[in-house]
Image (tube, rainbow, N blue to C red; front, side, top):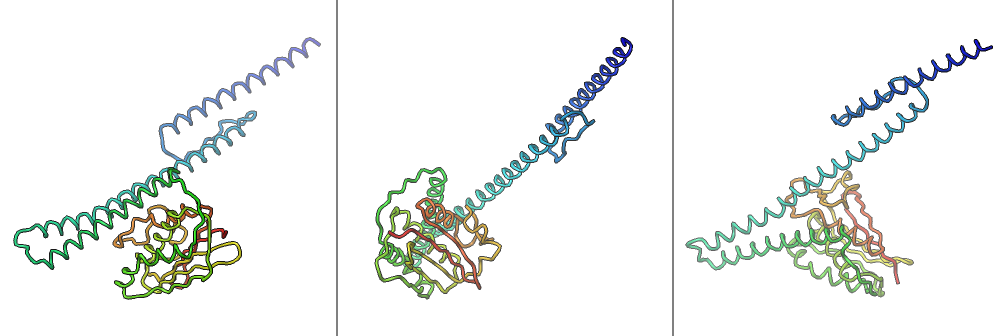
Length: 301
């Protein structure tokens, strides 16, 4: 009997020692792989030295966490790359009109320049370039404050029709220069919403500016009231916006003008999107047969 107990004890001891040895080798093997991952940027996955206990499940879970971290790192790198490209592009956008204004200024103060008409032309060009830079910097400042959640909207009851008509009138000269007249269709009855007046005005201004920058004609400004909502829709024909742009159309710094010659910082629609949602509205964009449309919906009061 004692012999049997001794043999069984020996077998158990050998089994436990073997299992303990496997655990030790498995841990050493995992540590070696982790040290390798610390030194190398790789998609290498942890593997098992031997099947023992719950180590297989542990390795599977560690690989899952590794993949999650790799995916997050890839998103961060993608975001950083996009951010760097955006900064380079916006720097170029700001530098271009400043360089142009500087050139006109140098010609203006150059020797022998006595033609009053020419001087007036140079001054008008300088003023236009400075206005372009001012608008870009204003958008940058507004977007930065919006992202930092520093803008506090003051709600009030607003007659959207009156405000929309006022904003449209501000751009009268722009359409005269383009020798086109936008189609304006607004509901006749008073339409009210509760929102921040400056915020709604900024949304309207950005939408019209975007239409002027990217539009080639067939401008339409619509204000309709149906049920519990007020809809503002601005549309125009475009040759620079394609179907593939639509999923990014409200992204910051995104511009469909690949050559960046249209004086757009790519923040106008991002601000429209942020301001609208901040004030409880909804925004959408559509491209159909070359007509680009942005719609804004606000609850009616």
